Image (cartoon, rainbow, N blue to C red; front, side, top):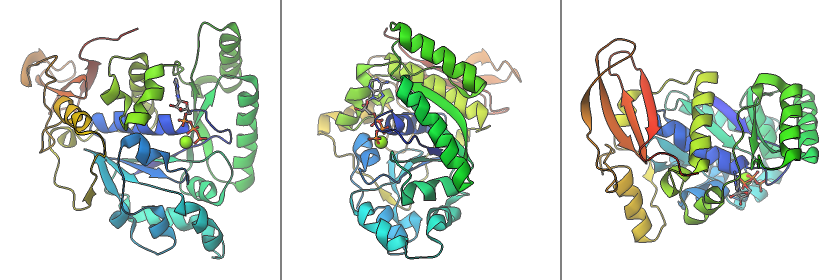
Length: 338
Ligand SMILES: Nc1ncnc2c1ncn2[C@@H]1O[C@H](COP(=O)(O)OP(=O)(O)OP(=O)(O)O)[C@@H](O)[C@H]1O
Ligand SMILES: [Mg+2]
């Protein structure tokens, strides 16, 4: 399991949005993804439209196994949630000599169950964030493209050096407005300073700000939006950078989870829309009613091994893949709405 902390000491820069949509995108690629919320605001559960009965508090304070507190938020996408009880956990756990390593220890038994864990941090160097940084070497930093935000990255780097764990592997410019000259100039200087670890920007997109309010990922809310396209590109970038390989069996089948299966606390019309667009009850893909598409073996040969490609549709994406060499390609079913 590759563990990545999604952090920035500045608030409101898109950490949670990135965690949700990067995680959901990786799960759509067939990776087994765990999202961990170490922010007492508990925004991950809200953004995914789930209300878990148990949270990280039970793991860190009551000593429950993390596995017992995880919910399946979507197929291949599990959540270890947080809520405001996490605030009262912090003074309790700092009394322990090993307080900084409690999350590392809690996640260890899960390492064979997931391909990747993404930890959504709060905007401070709190006890929980230090736990998150101790659990991983890899930090992904979303940032808005503004002068003060860029100085915040330097501050984060210094703090990471101070605590001696984690380094920034990836900087994701968020809420980027290419019409603003200052934003373009700052993006250029960010690239000048940090080079190739700066990804393509996530453009400002109102659909991204609407999605958490209705408990949906951007791929569910509007798979044709700029936000969905930008996050889909980030998914590919991160998968390549961390060498995350999808287990294709997880795309096609879902074994019944032994853990709590989250109820999506959405109005029933929305819950149905999600099911109709994405998955049947056993987790296999279904075509969207707007775009009935052939699923199964295609006539297209795999570019790598020449075997016929399989095709399926997940949450607005058409996925073609090879069962022999694990080649895979995904594209939006209905093109991008600009
Ligand atoms: N690309 C975008 N375009 C438009 N709105 C966005 C975009 N990314 C995030 N937002 C919105 O900006 C707000 C802040 O985003 P988010 O909650 O992800 O930030 P955060 O860094 O997790 O904040 P906090 O520090 O409070 O945890 C949210 O309302 C979110 O919907
Ligand atoms: Mg957040």
